[in-house]
Image (cartoon, rainbow, N blue to C red; front, side):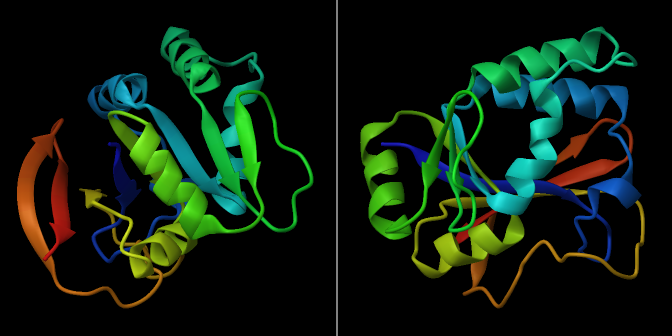
Length: 177
């Protein structure tokens, strides 16, 4: 049975704006490369899927690490939750209705971990009791605005792990209490 994990970089004040947080440090980039390599797959909301589609086509300014990440990203199954999209890219399956049943089936049939991409989707799945862990990668930046990591109230969580990632990022891992 798969574990469903919502994890994202966020600012000290709780926002997940990837444009303002900037690229990860080399150590954190390597961590995320290995992290994606270890995943069974990823469930995305439309917005996060469209952001991550950046990795579908090689870019001229990429370095070797970018090419490695893109190759791993492209190889992983993706399930895209959207009522507005009519098609999705390679290795992706559109989930247009009955979110709860489809994600419960994924969790029951798949091994390992499936990452959840997007705060709104994480809220919906959390409200359904389907998110097993929340992993917050706290960046030493205060943004003051943006999209919050938690898109709405959450039942009490319990801390299950904390790690220093690289020189200045802390990963906090919480599970529903």
